[in-house]
Length: 184
Image (cartoon, rainbow, N blue to C red):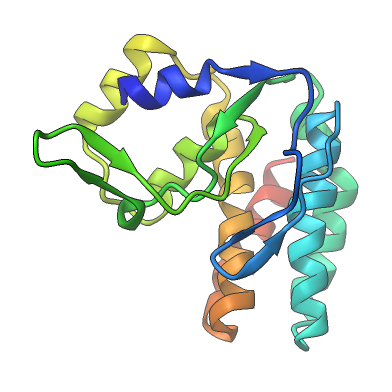
């Protein structure tokens, strides 16, 4: 947790990365942007929704997506995070320990973004301990509004799973979007 917090304190002025990369096998667009909400909307959520549409996942998923993207600015009206260096795909399958116990992360989908996105993903699929979060917060405490943005950040990964693994993730994506829209 402490090491991740230290990595998240490495910042730059723009969100994104110097080149596109992948999250799993899905292309990840990293066009640099000064506005975090625009970056997340256009290069994360809209991109995943476009990929889903091309695979034939339209209907209610796309309708909810359009509504959410149109209203997303509300969630960032008073929140302007720094552009932190991120792992980008931080789940329990992408970390381990070296022989001496030193934590090691691998298989990144690296970019500069809101550090909360890394923390949100650690909660999406589980596998991280209470000690991890405690150590992180000792070094770099999370903003009090983290819980209100966590599902928005995890939506990206759920939509990516729709695109990678198919329709079994659509209900989860739709439920997240519906919940976010109800809370706005």
